[in-house]
Image 1 (cartoon, helix red, strand yellow):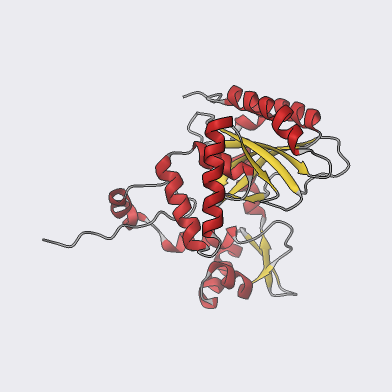
Image 2: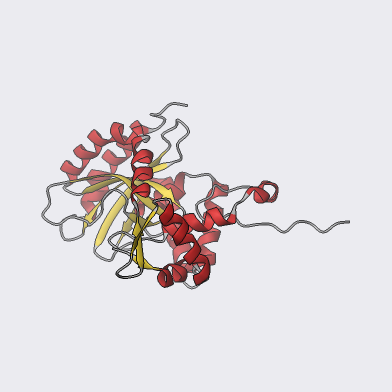
Length: 276
């Protein structure tokens, strides 16, 4: 009898699949394309540019491979070379891609008035996010009038397991996808895994009991946040809405007692808003 094919773990950012479907579709996976996209994804908010050596370290690739990728992506406009420093920054082609992707998310336009209202009521930041591999990416953000605000805007990325927004996503996504995501988290950081798993399990239980998850000082020590997930429909993946602010201006009790029911009702109103 032939040996069974080894089970393959889903890559971060890809939908969870069965072992059979992974084995059947792996031959369609283009490694060079994946490496180029990983390279673009390693740039972080606020960074001016990266050298090949730093890109190689972040992506786990050989310098020679990175050099070929950066040359190709520069020729295509996805990177811009900075000869004076020998480094690269994201090019205008990536801006066009991001703008096109955001323009196609009509749920942002629909959610914006309610987000503004909730931000004004709570005097906090309200964000709308989607999963980006092992994180959550902001696609819309509204702020209250507080003098102190979170340094978060469209494009910002949060931890999937530590943030309220990420935990809300995990609470409503399919169980198979959730387990695949958590397995990827475990493989990336074995040391932190027990604490992360404990936080996620606590959040899942909390979501079942209260319809909401919290992250008080777990994403950042001085930030309190709550979040709710919803499925917008229209072929879009699950999304999350959070509300949070520095603890010095936002009381945890106010978040849970006053903001939570409004956030839950708001998310319920967005359920299936984009149609089937």
